Amino acid sequence: MKDTLNIAPPVIEAEALDLVFQTADGPVQALKDVNLSIGKGDFVSFIGPSGCGKTTFLRCIAALEHPTAGRLTVNGMTPDEARRKRAYGYVFQAAGLYPWRTIAGNIRLPLEIMGFSKAEQTQRVERVLDLVDLSGFGKKFPWQLSGGMQQRASIARALAFDADILLMDEPFGALDEIVRDRLNEELLKLWARTGKTIGFVTHSIPEAVYLSTKIVVMSPRPGRITDVIDSPLPRERPLDIRDSSQFIEIAHRVREGLRAGHGDEV
Amino acid sequence: MTRALPVLSVILGILAIWYLATVWMNAPWAYDQAAREGRSLGFGALVSDTMAQARPVLPPPHQVAAKLWEGLTAQAVTSKKSLVYHGYVTFRGTMWGFALGIVLGVGLAMAIVRFRVMDLSLMPWAIISQTVPIVAIAPMILAMSNKLGIEGREVPKAVIAAYLSFFPVLVSMVKGLRAPDQMQLDLLKTWGATEAQTFFRLRLPASMPYFFASLKVSVAAALVGTIVGELPTGAVEGLGARMLIGSQFGEPLITWAALFASAILAGLLIVAVGTVERLANSRMGVRA
Image (tube, rainbow over all chains, first blue to last red; front, side):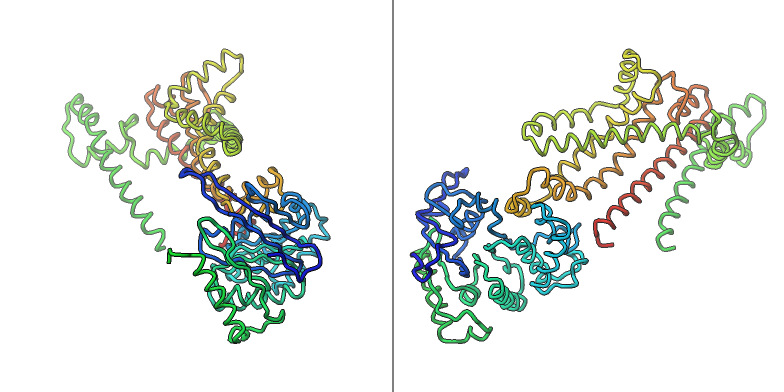
């Protein structure tokens, strides 16, 4: 599973990761023996059916859940230490903007919490608004923006404090297909411009194949990795790359992986 | 006009029923008087008599309005006979009780949301407190504050008003402070926000709509509490004292005028709270 192409130490490394939730119905194995290494600048998608642990794994990286066994490091630190070092920005499925703050006010929020100076806050807000193509919308309130624009604002918020890692949990899942295509394209441009390492949870095979340099296929009960595909697609990806035979081939392999993971249940 | 029409028709309906009830309820006394004087009473004479008795069982609206107007304007506002003066006394008591109720309600809600043990131990008592009739508690609070050597009625009145007004604030604020969903709390966690930052930047602003909704109930409750605090014998100031004096001295018009004065005061207070809410809303970017 080690990514041999990367000489630099991995940004995120998981070894024999287990996570068991204690629920009222007894223990639930959310993650079982997860091994994965993510290099700097990788765009990694996690794909699989509900309950396969893809979101749980992302939450482990963000120190929102804590593995019950195994080793997980982020930039060589524990996830909790990495959080204190502002290693990652997190984007949820819902934009989660505060309705009582303007767009600029929302993006400023993590900066206020982290104690950046007023001048630096303003300058950073301007920069990330420009990065997600929302310049001039800073003074608007969230309800004045479309769903896609709100999600872009929430990405800007995650970028504002210069985290190297961007963790995205189905960020475009609630948007319609047309908006989704556009945001995918913009996300790739953003990734190319910033060189961030991105962890991206999705339900959609085309989305995963289009975006990723590495696709992690997962399956449920217990949540585990069934396949890791290193994408041979070039980093520069126009939308019509999705009609190429290479793209269709990878999509096919992902689909096969998902089917195999489901075993006799389907 | 389309909005005023339903309100006007309801008012007209009430006035019509009120006038009919006035004739009906004041008629026995009119008949008694006529019988004592040995004259018979025609319908027209009966109606005009019931509209203008000095001590009617039910005074007609125009008598109440005249008495109210007299109470508001016929003397200096500092006079003991002025409803403006008594209204101000009640208003002051209401504001103290209201402020105390808000502090108590918000404080308890913060404790309940923060500490599970407070949720389990405090909430049931808060609910029980509201099942005890305030008219039973009010004289006890007055007597106790007297025993403690507290001069006058300002403090016990504020306590009684707060006793009623903290509860709506408490219930709404518990709900409001818990309004943020797990995702928003997780997001703050990923930024390493402290508990104080989470409270002031997320929980408190998120609770504001709940807070203002509760204030309208709470300010009315504080007014009722203040008036109840002015009722027990011995009070000489405030709209509650006026109501009691009217009934003790057989002057129903005084009671009714004080009653309407307190209704007007309640209306003004609710309008004031609504104005503050609108100002806060526009600052917090709520869609107009």
